[in-house]
Length: 402
Image 1 (cartoon, rainbow, N blue to C red):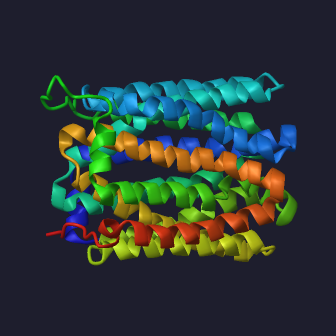
Image 2: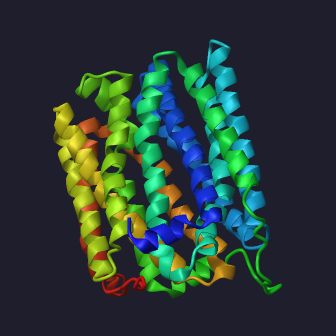
């Protein structure tokens, strides 16, 4: 590990924040396997898998901008405490539904909607806290380390969720609730983080205005929106695991973990050597690789090849994530970070949850394999269009680390 990476991890507040993120992310990744498998097992309908994403997307879309406004006007630590506590209660709700012996789809969707609403407040506060906990010249490495922790949870969580599902979904949701309780403790130990003094004229829509005034920011977050919206196939992994690759819940867990393996390796490399030169070109190339890997996965009927394609896909996506988040954080003043992060998160939420819904609808209409392949091709087209449409994004450079 380099000296600058050690400098980041030496900060107590940042370590506690990473621990809280690890535990909460691990809990939700464990639960994701159980929810996907449970919903498909109950319904046998690809569209219902898409509705899991839609149930989270709608409340997140409505509440993320207010969540970003709150993050700029309240103690971000208190926001994280409240959001983590509510997530713990929601996971307890899933546990109750499974213990009852007859979980209904509508009840599961309702709990997922609560999780989407809570994330609308957790995410802007969490993203804007990183820049408060580390110095600006360490930010790209902090973002990479933060992303590494996230990817560790994405690697371990689905695999652990698949193993725990052998004991029943109640074991999965109970474990998730315990991990979230630990995350609550880690957030509680953080020092208070009241906001700086702000103008009384600060408006909830200021984040949108700021993003529109910066073409490199607008280009980066809209690129992620359309690339993942078209190229994301994670909602269809239960179908691939069960009907195409002929594997069970453990295989599904491994498929969900494969992108995170590639992403974690990529994030570790980025923490050691941030892509400071020609960052815009590298961002666009990463999106192109993401689309190509999606096509390979869509066509594959080999479990090892599918895992390899998902790992490449995850590695490319991590390059995009680190570059985009560093660009947003370094280009935004502190008193605007919550609202700008909220705008970014609206795009991310749309690309993930709405992308899951789009994948479910496309699979129901076109078939699973054609839907995934068409999405990957669309991702390649988007990368080319954005390279032409946003020259400021194509040419942007990151600040150099000391």
